[in-house]
Image (cartoon, rainbow, N blue to C red):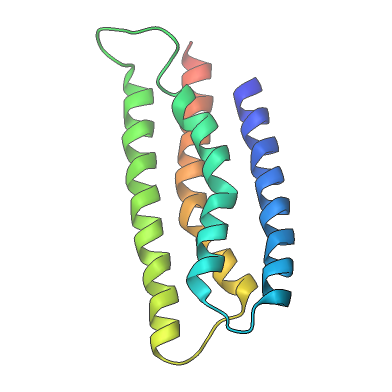
Length: 132
């Protein structure tokens, strides 16, 4: 369960660091490009997701991965890709419609893009640890 605690700590640090970076960028920028803030939202959750995602692989090579790890690994990857595509589409539609979202809203969309993938990876790791 140390992996889950480490992932949550890294996630919290990423959220705080990017939240502070948004404030500094928004204060300096004359124009608001929502994709910059959306990417910061993705970057906030990415290291935390990677910590638990890579731990699903295991530390020793096995001829066949455990079913729980395989399902969580594939589902988490798919959720991350779908989340990134959908939230980027939302940012693009808002920009195209002329309804420029605030920097914090774009950041939240980026964070939301990886949140389901992170949750699936955390759940998969918890189930894997319970089985072992």
